[in-house]
Image (cartoon, rainbow, N blue to C red):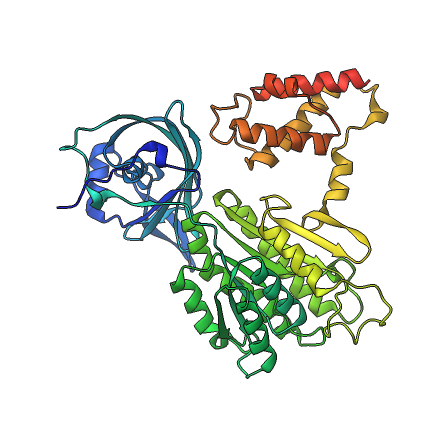
Length: 493
């Protein structure tokens, strides 16, 4: 007989999680139908020339395991559900395996309340996301307590990360491997299959930092068969936490080869890694873009098209999975001092060093530019620009700064509320359909006291205002923020 799990709610920390899979049969469907009184589960799915009728799982049904998560995390306690918000994304079909990942995102020790973010998915298809909270009540009598077989608790990781870097034979790829090895990252590196002394030298130098390094031969430009071993390693290993896609053919390569390595390979590797990222609700994918996408030099059309396709793909992943712990980055440098560009630029042309690109990649992976993902544009002797592909922080900040030339406008209050609405949704990653009018610090799952301070600093940066500690203390509701900022604007006029 299994031992009862002795875990107290004080042992739970932000970042802890449970992860499990379920498969729902037609028999379970019939039982649910009898309980709910609903016998209609058909949903038209377009297939070929005619719609196909397939049984889909109602979101209330597929969300049933949410009630078991607290017991999986803390066997032996009673719980009270205090809040739950479910957002349906895609339909799920019966007899389809569903993976559930619930991660602790907030905790109030005083009230013994634990806040979770839970997602349900299959491979890279997301079924729903949920924000829910439960309060830990009294402990059950020991004879009634569930035993260890019910325990699905996964403590937060130690912080050691394993990064997959493609194209490590090139100047930028090797610089990234060495820089991250020096920062304590474990590495899985890839390059073309043919033996190369430079590969061995880089791997040996990385190992001198005391980290683990694994080399996998992969010809990303030679068709999908050239990287199947790499895809299998990602899909079945489970230890790779992040992907940095550096590999790219030279500028003068064919459009097919450029697109194949920059976009198709990135997409294939990402789809192998994403199920693990979603299960952990943590992980990043960074691709090496190019600032040439902004100017499209003559002769670079195919190269920039491939980089643009990959950049849009990363932006799409952020849109789909940005609320699930995933972060996607495009690092787009200008001229870098490698053999890759020597034939295209004069030796005296200002350029970045590969080590600068590696340092920038490390800064992104470590959250020094935030956790929203996006696009970092680097140029020699020019301040970096951060934003979304096509939109950068310098331009965005100008549009968000208060227009001091329009102080006589009669609609200042309305404009201000529109500004705060957009910034509030941007910071907390809310959609336009989310109701924020009743949002309150400590009651809304996404808005705790720490996030409140971070949000006020975010407003200072993007609105050109200054808030005192008293201002921060007295803004406990969204409506308080609107009133406070209207007062600030009025005093300026």
